[in-house]
Length: 250
Ligand code: PXP
Image (cartoon, rainbow, N blue to C red; front, side):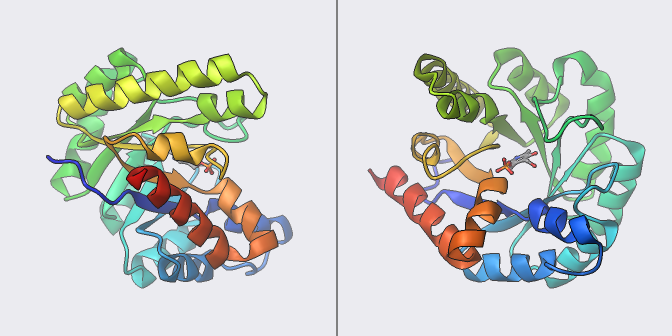
C-alpha cells in the first residue's frame, strides 16, 4: 500500500432522507442528491440503513445500487438482517457501525475488542462476497489491533470527539483528539489497514484531518446536507472538496 495523493470524499446522503421522511412522500429524493453529488465530485456515496429505517430505506439502497457510477459505502450494524441485505446487493464497501435505537447519531466507535470472535465470523462472508469491510472505531490502539485481527481491510476513525471539542471551544481537548487521530492513523497504516475518517466534519474542522497523510477517505454528511440549504448541494460539496485538496497539498 502506498500513500495516495488524492483524498477521496464520500458524501453521506442520509439526511436528505431525514427531510423526506419528516413529511412522508418522495421529496427530497436521496437518489437525486446522490446523482448531483457524483457530478459535483464525490468519489463515493455513503448511506446508513438503520435498523429503525429512520432515514434511508431499503428502496433507497436498491435505487443507489442501480444508479450509482461511484462506489457505494453501505453503513450498517452487525446484525443478521443487515448482513443479508449487504450480501444481496454486494456494495463496494460495507462499514460496520455501532447502533443504538435511542441515539440521535452514531455516538461512538464499535467495541471490536470485546466482540472479536463474533465480528470475525460476521465479516467473513462479506469479504468473501467481494465487499471491502470497514470498521468504524475510536482512535484507540486496542480497537485498531482488534479490527486488524478480525480481517477488516479498512478502518474509519470517528472524528466526532474532535469536532465536538472544536464546537464547544475546548481547544485543548480538540488538539489532543487530533493528536490521537494523527497517531492512530499512522499506527493503522503501519498494520496495512486503509484509513478513513468521518463524523461531524465541517468546513471549520475538515482541514487538519484532511492533512493527515495516511487518511485516504473522508465521509461527510450532516453538515454538507445542511449547508446545501444555503448554497445548493453542488457548491457545498465543491467547497468541501477545495478545502480537502488545499489541506492535502499544503
Ligand atoms: N462515518 C460514519 C461511519 C458515520 O456513521 C457517519 C454518520 O452517519 C458519518 C461518517 C458522517 O457523519 P456526519 O453526518 O456527521 O458528517
